[in-house]
Image 1: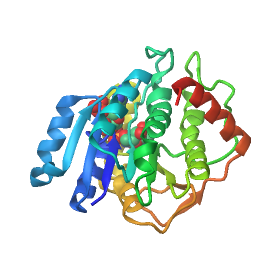
Image 2: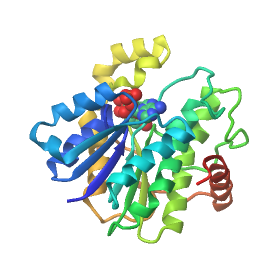
Image 3: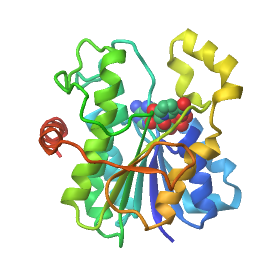
Length: 272
Ligand SMILES: NC(=O)c1ccc[n+]([C@@H]2O[C@H](COP(=O)([O-])OP(=O)(O)OC[C@H]3O[C@@H](n4cnc5c(N)ncnc54)[C@H](OP(=O)(O)O)[C@@H]3O)[C@@H](O)[C@H]2O)c1
């Protein structure tokens, strides 16, 4: 039985992955912001709920991540897989208590920070796995990181790519620096979940009209998460670009100097 932590596991794609991994017989730890959604998720698991716990955490701030990591480590000394499906979809300017944009902290920095703090527990696993979910962002070296990490003022059109690509750089960094650890990035595709709740109205309207035709199912979107924790026939940092197609992977081969620059900046911010 593996112990698998899903940050974002109380909702949407993370919740579907939790259901599938519970069906495989694993023990699950779910992190999310809304305790009511956490309780509802546990209640929906039926008898399998005795292998799942939910911890409410605000992962948008450094303190919130530290507190969550401390509580997880207090309950689990080994983590076999860490899955990041936390995310917000906002184009508005706003700042967390640390002066950073929430799209940056939730869709990238909290993943870096939480993983760094949980490394002692991941290192106790036979084959630790770290997975990060993003939108469709193939691993390329053409993003502009000049505004990293402040992204001020926030410009969604310009900043979403470097923010999400930082996940790919972190996957490359992890596999380079943590012997035996496998890390990858998974494209969520387009799925009707709570992610659209604070999206601009025209996106919500578009999703309502086109969603039934164009969207992936939540099961399809969660599939590569589930397969990547089930199987050990992948190792190098990889990007799964097609929802549901685990066999179709792109190696993450990025400029190492950029990776180092982003990791140095992340370490300074999170102090981890
Ligand atoms: N659905 C899509 O079409 C789509 C497209 C592109 C990328 N993605 C990415 O796919 C991943 C899964 O998203 P989803 O579609 O399943 O959306 P979702 O249902 O809204 O799930 C997002 C998760 O992130 C958590 N979260 C947000 N802010 C948080 C915070 N400050 N602290 C702790 N947890 C926080 C949410 O918890 P609460 O619900 O408790 O707030 C929820 O569990 C995300 O990374 C998203 O960016 C999705």
